[in-house]
Amino acid sequence: MVNPRICLPRRLTCFALVGMLALNVPARAEDRSPDAGIARADGVAAGNGMVVAQEARAARIGVDILQKGGNGVDAAVAVGFALAASYPRAGNIGGGGFMVIHLANGEDTAIDYRETAPAAINAKSFLDAQGNADPQKSRESALAIGVPGTVAGLALAEEKYGSGHFTLADLIAPAIAMARDGITLDDDITDEQTNVLARLARWPAAAKIFLKADGSALSAGDRLVQSDLADTLETIAREGPRAFYEGPIAEKIAVAVQAAGGVMTVADLKNYRAIERTPVRGTYRGYDVVSMPPPSSGGVELIEMLNILEGYDLAHDDETQTLYLMIEAMKRAYADRALFLGDPDTVTVPVAKLIAKSYAAAWRTTIDPEHASPASAIRAGGSSDPEGHNTTHFSIVDRFGNAVSNTYTLNFSYGVGLVADGTGILLNNELDDFAAKPEAPNAYGLIGFEANEPGPGKRPVSSMTPTIILKDGRPFLVTGSPGGSRIITAVLQVIVNVIDRGMHIADAVAAPRVHNQWMPDQVFAEPAVPPDIVAALQARGDKVVPQRPFTSAESILVTPEGFIGAADPRTRGALAVGY
Ligand code: DON
Image (tube, rainbow, N blue to C red; front, top):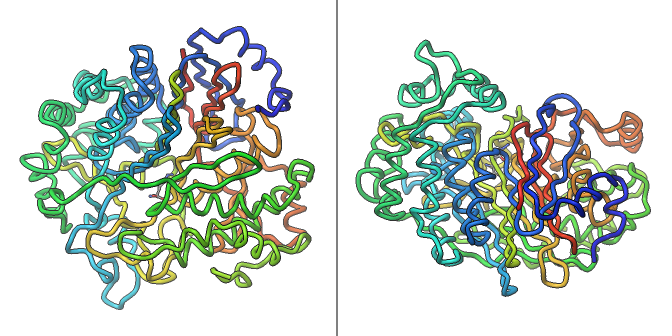
């Protein structure tokens, strides 16, 4: 049952829902600004299918596939390839990610297409001569490049769960057209290119595509043409996904990575496999939570936090108390993340323990309702500057009852910035998500221990949290976000805002967010968190530091009347579009 209060704060949108079920109602909010307070939120209604993505062209391509009779997985695969052309800072074929799928027949599954470490990576790969973690190596050098998983992952999803009405080539075709013909760039894309100019300028093969001839960033209104990427996509469309991993494309990737000082070989590419995994499942106040298992920490830590919070009456607590309790839950879950999470194919991750209700109950006994726990008091088991929107999430539902939640990334914006010459493929710097050394923070300030140490063939722990909430076995809420370590807590807050606080999905997505990750011992608060709440949290002992928004929870709520898509107003170019 949909919480009746969901519609109350936004009566206008609810009215629109009834009147526009069959209409295509795009909501591009031109007044969105990532730095200022969070702009107006939009909820978009549709009766047959919905795509919410961080880039409008890709979202429309997804809806077009749905309208042609495709299912949610067909649409997700088309959106995934399209974003590689239209949103190159995060959309990719040179990175990796995760897809959580709910099938209309009631089954849930997850595709792990996380990057793997090349065979020559070991526990010392990202250390300097003194044995200290060297961020230059793990973030800015070609050593940071993991074997890309996106092509294998999207192809696996399509092969197993596509409708069968489309070939992979059909779904890649819109991406090829955009890469070949070029797209006119919007300001959100060009602003970010300016931010990462130095990274792109280091590599001539990247600069010739993404920068002007004089080395400056492209401007809004300029065209981005990616002919090499179009050729690469055409080869994949013609020959299938293995063409990425064996043969001329793989050879060019290995040559480019090695020429830049990395260690990836053609054998690493040939050995890459996407893996279908059983999603991690929990329950929260009568809803089922289906999310990404390790090597992402997202699902496990999301469920751990929800289990802790289930013991409190958040629906009736005031906002400060709700935020306070969420922050206490965050501290404990992220302490566990640091100690226990790793690649499940090389370490044993105690998932069952971490998502047990009894484990959450034990954590609750350590939470003082009035006084914040310092990070130093929290022991698992019983910072650096953020980079903006560098990962990208999209949520899709179709009229058949399928739902897809997909988050994928190059890690930093434009990854390491290296394009493998002649392929148009931008390569990731995902291996910074390993714990280069116990307790050395990664780019998101996350620390880890032996469970997440670099090693050959290993997948670094991720925070990506593509999630589907079910009610009575059917999709209720589809959500996920970019934002590095902030992803899991962003997803948590969307869920609590909808289920406990009865907010309209657009308001739940737009509401200002807080974040704590155990270490550093700080609560990051978006500027829109009201000053009296900041003061109240500080009075309880939390160190609150302002931080600009950089999560973006593209979400869909399924109601008895239809789908409501909410594009996160933190991303200027995001679009919810349905039919
Ligand atoms: O997998 C992870 O957790 C990170 N590599 C994701 C990076 C990210 O979300 C950056 N976006 N803002």
